[in-house]
Image (cartoon, rainbow, N blue to C red; front, top):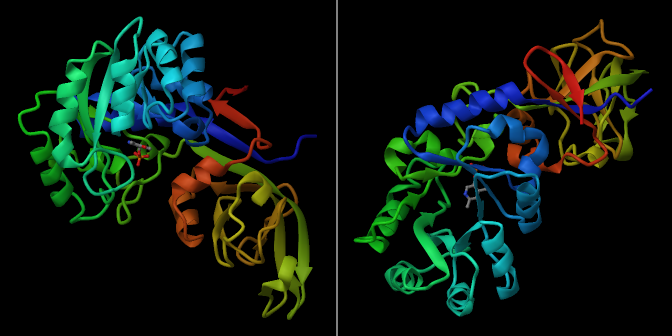
Length: 364
Ligand SMILES: *Cc1c(COP(=O)(O)O)cnc(C)c1O
């Protein structure tokens, strides 16, 4: 008998979320962000549902190479670019588009002799202050790259630090526009929050990530309000029930003490599976489709919940940690983090099962 914990991956939901991106940002090219193993969903597993995207955007060169080896033919963009000159021949051979964000990369491209020139996204720093050229340097960089034989085509891009905040776009958009004035290359600005706010952000190429997986990029709009459906549902079961007496505690550190006698459900899922250990008492969990509350500290292999409101629950009762019926954003809020972190953290020991339309489950 397998441990009852698994992540169900709903490809129909992913297709639907991609369709939402198309509705929000009509006429743009969509590069689906699939870094971190498609935000924990399994890159190769979700690929069939991304077949209408114009390409993929990721961080890991190895994953990009593997996609080419598996005959993925559309565009692939490396979001942090290359890290050393020695990677450039492989980028050329594999037709990988690259971000260029600093002068050292410009010099490497100018020096390189490549079998095939590259598609290059010049990254403008509009206030995030991680990667990117200062606005005043952008025109000069484009000038140099456009005359380099290593460069086939240029695009201009930026990544917003506060695209999820009402007043977070105005200033960086101004900086971007003035940095790119007179430069007639296609532009890529929007992550998921930017796609939702596409009428303000604009651009020719969008790079949605989290919304494809059915979580909300915005603090005040739920995924449901945005028409997004969860792709991952993390499912388990109750594997034991304890009858607590008043004043008894549960779990390591005794961080939960019952004020009255009640039942506690023990669920097979813990931080060793990627569930956040810092999720406090009260964090929501679904048992038999009903919302219950965490009672006690998550341990490596188990969490514990108050079953007072679900008297019918017992050993074997179905549990949803997040996904269908319980948005990952709700769990993330309770645990003071973001849906992104929870999805990315699902551990390799958790089996993933793809559910296709028609309800047939295929184990990969
Ligand atoms: C991860 C990433 C994205 C996607 O961001 P979401 O918020 O998940 O939509 C877009 N652009 C860049 C540069 C990224 O690193």
